[in-house]
Image (tube, rainbow, N blue to C red; front, side, top):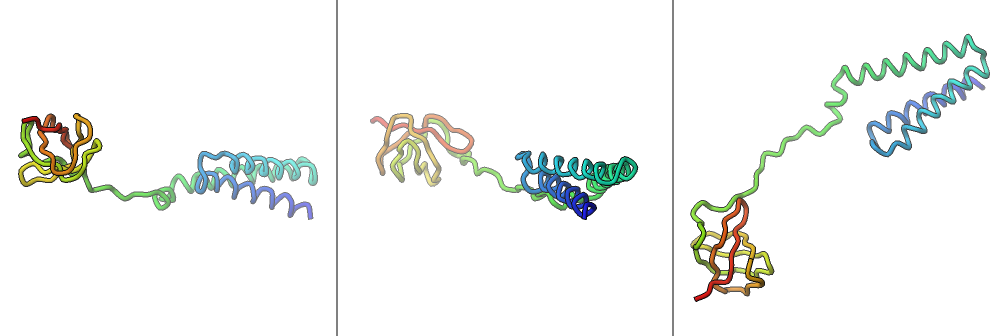
Length: 155
């Protein structure tokens, strides 16, 4: 019966350490409990069976841990478990035909962000002159990579 306790403690400890790496990394609770279970299994192996069998249990546990670590690091296990997709998309930029000083119309309320129409192009804009109501004339103050800065056009 004691051998079952020793084997189960070592096995549960190995599973908890594995779960620490694969399921909840960074939490550390499963890893710490796993190492405690492994150490308890080795300790009970020494106390139940003496030093000779305890040495074999310790050696077997260490070789098992080193073997599993070598296998996981040597094979493509981490590549199979990791996310390897690439993001191919990019942020849609502002049309090159829009320049500072261009005039247009607010398509939505700019509070302080909204859509404006400059020429035939509809872009997202930010207002520097506070809230701008729908269909109000606007003037481009600055062109950024993904939006433009506008202000209410004064006549």
